[in-house]
Length: 312
Image (cartoon, rainbow, N blue to C red; front, side, top):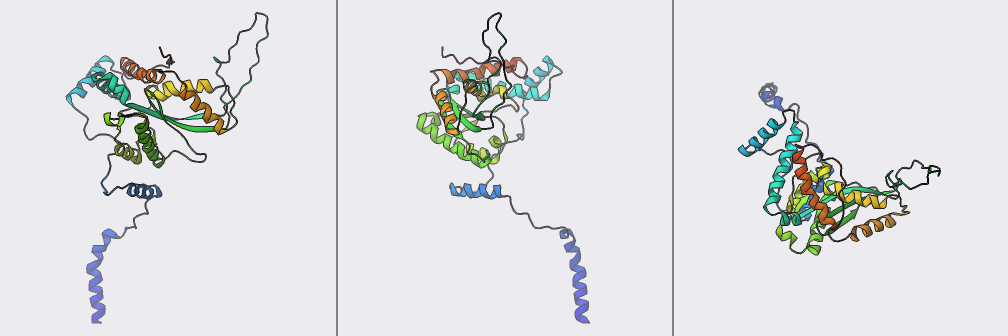
């Protein structure tokens, strides 16, 4: 009886302490991607568990200069969207950096992006135009679509030419881990092809795709000593690969049939390496023009325009 009474008293005193933990559940197992991340980090020689800088909103972005810039934008157009003002402010900061030393600034930029290239991509209406006689019948044109055969190409380049070309293996997708390794390969390529560029400091220009701003990508950028140029969201008109390199490349490939991945990639690399002196320089030089034009449009999209690849 004494023992039963003691147990009852003990339960009565302990039960209130257990109530806060009544809903406790074991911590879920970490996702495979997190495990792979740390395994890869430790294999590369990491010895600490401190969090790396990650993308996102800064703790504090307000200062007198920014406030005045926002005020001027609002006074100029009181119906301006927040996204347009943000875009204009980002580009204004980039133009300021460029103005300090334009030549050195452009030479430090390395830009890159991904694109699909097809085994067959039909010509545009403009490309398929042909002269006919006054009484000649109208040429018949059949509706065509890009072929199912395609290759995902990632191309990094600068003012002097192509630095790295990567083709995604079939059945795979570009993940944070894949892009992490790609940035490591990019640094190796820069060391081999551009003496002194790493010492000057590489300015990496890529868009805000998820794999470009994930934790692994941010860690790779820091590890390789790159500095990322700010890029406004949803702005393909300000990405050199999108407004210059890829359109020119695909214009060359349209209307041609490639019967294998090897034949296609050979054509891609052949075209990239045979471009005249000044081709890539002109493509990146157009970036400052587009930044300025975007400011003139108060952050609105730069209208589509063909950047001439003349080497004059």
